Length: 192
Image (cartoon, rainbow, N blue to C red):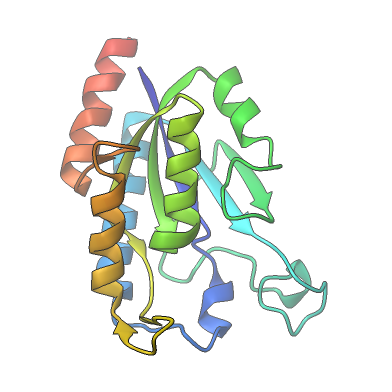
């Protein structure tokens, strides 16, 4: 089964948001870059997805006009098999990504990127519902602390654990980087 790495919203836009926190960034980039390196070495496709929304003005970091809708500093360079801009949480809504995946006979998606519980989780659920096998790699996702409706803090680590828990076995196979790359190697051999 042909696999594809989806790199969701790993863009400079986030550095310009008040909630951005560098604490988890080094580990995230290490895991994300390891996936990119493994997929590139296997000759497997890597898709880049950028999030764009809001007013088309330079002061909105998610507007193309800001200059921040570009790869996050520290992300390994790679030649994307395709690049899509999205305006919704799921990378499969209104982008044409679903068509591209079908045309390229992709059966398994490896989900990575920013934010764990938002665009990454939503894309994983949507992809599963549409019939793709999904490998979700929490270490290759990044999120930030939040405040719950009752005012209590919710740490990024708790958000990541919750996301892995609700996706596992229902919408995705939860994998570490090494396992995702081992599954890629197995799928590459099956496709040969």
